[in-house]
Structures are given as structure tokens and as C-alpha cells.
Picture: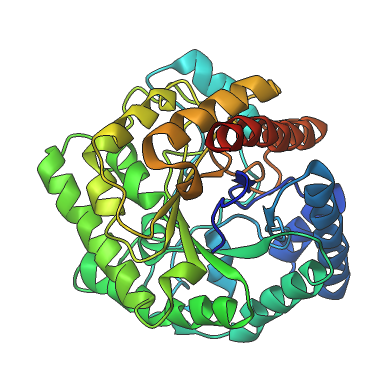
Length: 383
């Protein structure tokens, strides 16, 4: 990955708003697989081309395909892997049972894609061609774009296991390692295509408040240590500098008062092989956590991609706010070790709209402008 050697580079987390046509055809594919597949593929190619152009227009440096052809960042693997022919688990929902008024509001943000069967057999590839086709589509659309680098996302073994529960393997650890052995093929294919592999690892933070809230922190740390070890197993043959990872506490509108603090898990996260780690740092629950880097030593060669834009609100951050957030991080870990990012995805689930599409592009343009202002200060000081 390129470093911010002459200015602060910018990127985002992965998912971007899908076109209405793509959402319509993804729903049609779910109801009647194959009936309109050619139409869906054409719509996805068009949508990928569109979001690539919009990212360039906004001024981003490290861009991707916007995950246009996926229902979300994890469950799309269902159509490509064996072992998931069992009963669907109850919908995860976006509700907050502790806050009934908020839960009612969040019903409007629910995704229409809720098929989440548990694992009831050995996992393996049944349609790797579909994964390769996604990679080829992204590579073709990104080929002519004037950007610094291109990335593509893929869920980590621990994240897949978080969404698609184990009812087959003897232990969750055995299940996660089985996923690692299977998914390494997709990870390698992304890197072989010349793209930066982004491993989506929200499990490392989200498992705490969604599954293990009452578990002692020490025991929780043991669980995510296994997840990171499985991730490292899956990418053991890939160069660290061709990978980045994203850790987060969720992309929904939520109070976040039960989020595990970054300081309590950051040491484990930093043992993961990918060179760069992306994490939320703009929302009101985690914005202060830039201070932990005063005490946490960033390992040699590592890069951080803090979110300096909140992906869950319709406020367009002022470029000066963005610049200040970047300067905070650059001041503690060094400017060359910072790439400015976004807290989470803007299109995490197809059909769920939390931020107006037009506002998304305005926020990303503000990200780029804020990075320019921060760069001016950072490199002027060094001159």
C-alpha cells in the first residue's frame, strides 16, 4: 500500500449507495434465482462504473467498486459456498430493545435481505466463478480510473462465522479455521488481480456488544485472538503490504454505550498481518480514541486508516473538522502512517438507506478537501 509521503491520502470503507435498479434486481434474484441474472449483471457493471467515477470526482485516492453487486458485505458468500442449506436464523434486525422508541425508528432502516442460514455441512466452494467474476468486473471498471490505488473487500473468517452460525463443526474455532482455508482462495485472487485486499473484520469489536456483553473482558479477548489467528492463517502466503483490514462497532444508528473500547482490543488487532487497519473515529462514541495512540506503539510498517467522516448521519462534516481529526492522528503516529477514511460503509446492506445518496458524495468530497487542508499544514510545518 502507498503511504502518505507527500500528502494525506484518502479512502473509504467499501460499500457505497447502490442504484435503485441494482437493488430491484438483487431482490428479484433472491426471489427467483437466475430469472433476470443477465439484466442484474449489466446493471451492476453500469453501477460500478458510475461509483468509480463519483469517487474520482469527489477526490478520493484509494477507491473500489462500491460493493455494488452484493446484498451486503458478508452474506453474499451464501450463493458461492457449500454448507449453508439449513434453516434461516431469525433476522438480526436493527432494533434497540432497551430503547423502544429508537427501535421503532430503526424499523425504517431494515434491509429486505434477511436470509441467514446456519452452517449445517462442510464449507467449500461451489461457485468460485461468481467470486472471480466480481473481481474481474471491479478490475475492468477501475483500470482506467486515475487513482493512487484500488481495493476490494472480502469478509474475514470470523465475520462470516458471526453472521452464519455454526451447527456442524465440533467447535466455533474449528468452523472459523475451515472458513479460513476456504476463503484464502478468494483473498489470493483479489491480490493476484492487482487489487489491495480489504478484510472486513467487524467481528473483532461487534461480537462484544452483540454476543458476549456479559463475558469477562479477558475471556472475550481470547475469542477474538482466535479470530485474528484464523485470519492470519488464511492470508499467510499473501504480502502484508497488499492488505488492509476494517474493524468496527457497526454501521447502524445506535447509542453505542455498550461498545468495547478500542484500547481494550487494539493490541490484538495489531497482531493481524494486514499492513493497514481501518476503524471508526468520527462518531461521538469513539472520536476521543485518537488519544490511545499516545500510549499504543504502532508496529513498524503499520498504517492506520481512522474514520474522519461519520457514515451514519446526514450532517456534511466541515473540511476544517475533517482536517482537525486528521491532524490529531498524524500528531501521534506520524503523517506518513495515516490515511484518512470513513467510519463504516454507506451501503452496508442493499435497500437500507441511512444517509441520502447525494449527501454521501458531499461527505466524501469534504473528506478529500479536509485532507488537503490537513496536508497543507503538515507539510508546511516540515518545510
